Length: 212
Ligand code: HEC
Image (cartoon, rainbow, N blue to C red; front, side, top):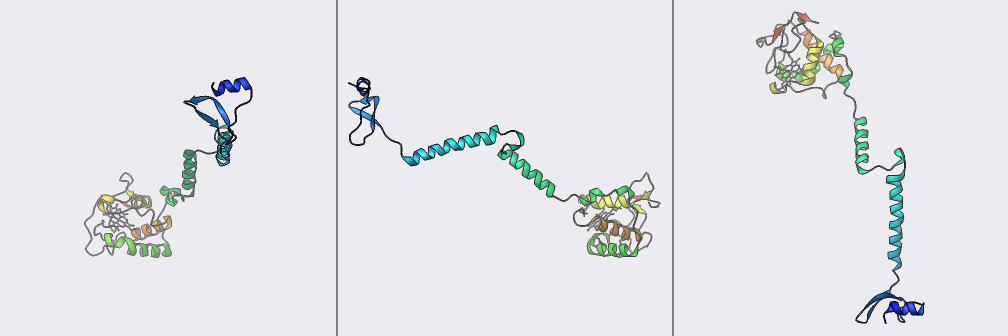
């Protein structure tokens, strides 16, 4: 007779004397039978924890409405990228209305501009801005500038310094110098117009009638 039959017939499940565990019905092969062993406590508790975890997970990630919902990794990444972008300081040059700039003329600005020029620009534009690797900036000829206007503006030099002319060897000074320093060095360069330095580099670009 199988265990199942026994259980059915006696109403009470059969108990193993040694372990006090119940026999499972319907599992008897060649006289070998299966006990309904008690699960170890640690295993059971882990199991319960996973059930609780799954409920918390389900509510947190799927049930909570809108904003309160917990973020997925992807959303967290996007939030962090947005936060980092907000931390990055805005480009100070971006805030300037270049077209409205006129050359500074006060002695202090010119002195500051000269200092910047001698520190950075002199190696390529020459001691007197007479031109070396870079063009002569004391004559009326400019490579960059709006030829339709006839005058060279602060804005034209400013733009060259912002973008640089990489293929010719001039880098962008956007991150090295502040807008104020840009204007100071440009003021200094403009103050050299017509100074006729020794060994000037031949004119390059277009002739402009003056500073606008
Ligand atoms: C590594 C060499 C180098 C340095 C350093 C350099 N320049 Fe230049 N610069 C050049 C070259 C080369 C050109 C010519 C670009 C072209 O042909 O379009 C140029 C062009 C210019 C122009 C445009 C001139 C024109 O005729 O339109 C301005 C303005 C200028 N530089 C300003 C500066 C200032 C200000 C500095 C310093 C803060 C500086 N440069 C530092 C190489 C340099």
